[in-house]
Each structure stands twice: as C-alpha cells, then as structure tokens.
Amino acid sequence: MEHISQLATKIQDTTASPDILVISRLFLPKEAVIGEYLYNRCLQDPEQVVVLAASCRGDKVFDQAQQFPVYRWPDAKCWLGGFLGSCLQPLFNLAASFVLAIKLYFRYHYRYIEWGHGYEFPSLLLLSYILPIRFFIYLHGNDIAGILSNPVWRSLFKLTLKRAEGIVCNSCATQDYLRNTFRLQTPTHVIHPVVRPEKFGLASNGKSLDELTDDDGVQISIGDRLRQAYNIPKTAIVILSVGRLIKQKSFDLVIENLPLLLTIGVDVHYIICGQGPCESELKSLAERLRVDKRVHFAGYVNNQELASYYAACDVFAMLTSTNTKASSLEGLGIVYLEASYFGKPVIASRHPSLIDVVRHEENGLLVNPKSGYEVFQAFKQLCQNQQLREQLGSQGKELAKRKTMHRSLYMGQGLEVRS
Image 1 (cartoon, rainbow, N blue to C red):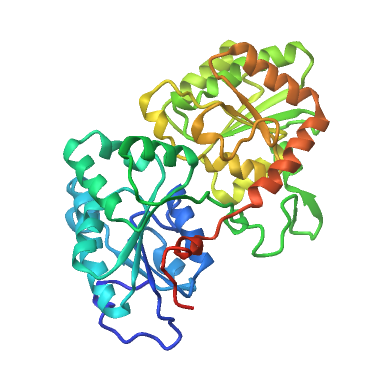
Image 2 (cartoon, one colour):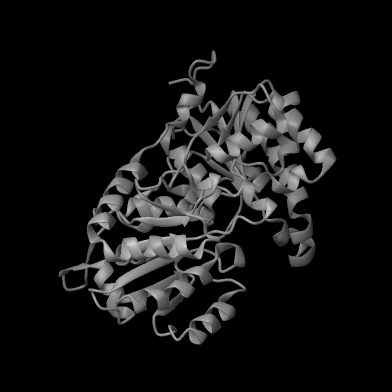
C-alpha cells in the first residue's frame, strides 16, 4: 500500500504503465459486495490498472500482495475522532479521491477513470473537467437511491452520466431503471458480478468445492462436517439463507413453511447466516411454531467458513420483499450467484433485480413472496424431488461460471487500452 506521502517516489521498474485508474471507497480487504466486484474487475487486467481506495483494516498486507498498485486515502475517523470523523467521512472521501486522483495522473498519466459506484460522484464530475481523461461509472442499485431523492444531486448526477464514456450496471434491472429515469444517450453496459473461488479459500490451494483435508490427512466432506456440528442428519433437507436479518429479507416466510413441510413428511432444517435487528423476532417465531430445534442461527460467518454452509445445504432460499420503493433499486444479489456456483438450486422472489442470476426452472424457482401457496409449492417441489434439485443445481453451476470481460468496454468505441 502506498499513501499520499509516497506519491513522489520513483516508479518501480516492475510496475507497468497503467491506462486505467479505478477509484472506490469500498475495496478489499474490507468485505463489501462492491469491493469484491471491483477487485474481480482489477484481476482481469492487472497490468492496466492502478487502484485508489479508502483505507481499511488489514489493507497494508493485502495491498502488498497485489499484482497492481494500490493507493489509499486515510480514514477520517483516525484524524477527526469517531463521531466527527463518521459525520465528515463522505465529504472527506470526496475531497481525498479528488486530490489523489490528480496527483496520480501526474505520476501515471492514465487515460481513463473507472469510478466504482455512485457514491461521491461530484469528485468524478470535477475530474472530468480538469483532467484530459475519459471515464466510466459503475452503478449497483442501492448506491444511487439517495442521489435521486435530492433535486440538486439528481441534476449533477445526470450531468455526470451524460459526460461518461459509458455506464456499467451490475444488473439489467439497474440498467432499465436508469434508461427509464434519465433517458440518456450514454452507452450502458451490464457486467454481472463473478464468484471468485479464492474468496472461500478453495482454488488457491487446490481444494475442491466439496472436500477439504483434516489435520490427519483424511479427506472429508465440508458439508457433512457442518451438518455434524449442527446435529443434522445426512438424509435431512437443509435450507440455507445468507443475509442481514432485516424484515425486507423475509426470513420469516421460510420459517413459517417449516411446519407445513414437516406435516408432509419432509425432514427439514433451516440455517440462517447473518446478523441483524430481527434476530430475536425470528427466534421467537421459530419457538412459537415449535420448530426452534430445526432453525439454526449461525450469526456472522466469514467467507471461508461460508463455503461449508453452501456445501451443506440442499436448497438456497431468499424471499426478498418487494413492497418498498427502494427495492426497485435493489442491487444484484451475489449470494444467489454464490449458491449456484456451489451447485445449489435457488428459491427467490420474482423481482427484476434477480432475473439475471435466478432463471425460473433453469437454476431455481421464482415465486411471488406474497402468495403463501406459491411459496409452499416451490419448497415442496424442491424438497421432495432430488432429481430436480440436482438438475437445477448443475445448470446453475454452469450459469455462475459465465462472465463478461471488462476490457469489452473499450471495444467498438474508438478506445483502445494499451497492451
């Protein structure tokens, strides 16, 4: 990692001459969907990019291991204290990214900026007037919800989009929303997130998705090992959900279906990975329905441990509610894609933001979460039909492996990234 004071140092001979500056306040090793998305983007063209991002815990060790230069601006809370720093962090991000982007231009003479999200976009707008560069802006859904509610920000945001060389959306739903809202002539592209096996500690050391080796050198199933930890029989059906425990995620709908599944003879267990304000409410619901012994709250689960949960489950279910206006800007759910990557069939809400990752009767079943009958029939169908689970899981695995290269942004527009 290099900080502000190191910008004047001589470029190492091993450093390529990057054409693209990727800027984001969210970047690994901080766990965030946007940060993971942008990191995967950088891995596609490591010799072409230099990264400018906000500092986070563990960034020094992480940045030194990368194939591309990473620069960080400091956390405002370290300078101004916790409360004041938190209040001024957005303004600090805007100013720091602006100043450092200019300094990095005189060091690298990059030609393009890829702005990683809708946050702090005024900095990008100013840079586009000051520097002789072209830029792309990435939009994920939730990152633009606050912008649209402010008339001034909305006007400036529209100007920024007009000046962009292109807009990159992580889902077709976000792309459609932008087109209908702003009616811009700026080219828009959809580049879906990809699943990086190394995130789960699988590919980098040759471990398969299904098996690990214990301390005695014995090969064991990571799924079976997790089931043993929760005292779940091998023959039982395990439903998994991963996410923040909030009402919008509708974990309660899954819990409410457990007694019905038990009634028809399905030996079912439900594991929930995540934390949030609704945890006590969900536990009370499970107790009231007398399924508390079958609902397992795992709490926060880090990425490497999460692989075991995906491997252990038979069905992945997230019935996100769509009854709020903000849900129309819901970002593409990476957990659905991860479940497919592990070969698990998905049950999800029939919502525009999910059609890119959950295709009805191809890698899962889409349902109306407000229809109790429809939800139950989906669970019944997958829980009782092993062949269908395997078919949807296998097709989902292939779907999750597809990816679009970010260098395609520079094709057919008179742009060419230096090789």
